[in-house]
Image (tube, rainbow, N blue to C red):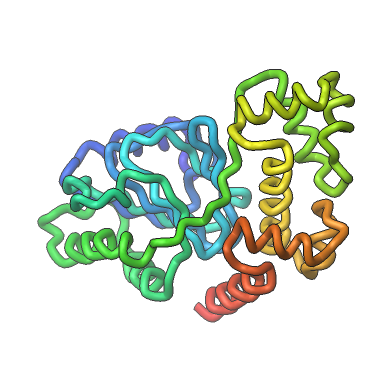
Length: 276
């Protein structure tokens, strides 16, 4: 793994050749500082999960998904385990082919086609410039197909805030997701009226207390699906749901697939990775 100084130097190096792509398959970007690239960046975490931190928002990246980071967006990627391989492709801007996809941050499922194309680049490392004709054209093609095969972004985005009044409340929620967290009780615990706490959430987070809690619980459930052998009922109860159907309905509303479909997809992916 790179040191922080080496990582920041690499960021400079990536942007030092504007016409070139940059390919890296390594255990890197593990809790490195906020930074940005002049180039658009494709990041895929092989197995496990990761978080992408951007100003005022936290994005959850489950296995079998990639994140597209547009040029100049401040971010950092946090990988929970240094054993997980991170695939990073930085693309020359190319006026971004005139498509709005390339200027918007998004997390998308990786199709079989995209996954096989990514595997094809695994032995490449560093700058790929126009003189590297075949490799450069291959990467350019990979970039060009992204808008066509990535039309349904994962809608799991957890807002963050630097408001000191809310930070202990958010920490408490994350630490007690299995408990019956009612807004009135949480408000009393931290010296708010229910109305004031609800208003603070809406003003600072742009969503309600209940909506934030739903997102936290679904993200915690997805983490357990990827990292434990618990069944769906056990996971639902561990993140605060007394009804499996209520959990399943909320999960489906936020993730756009049922919990059983999500677990089956990740199980198939893990088996595929084991055979490699």
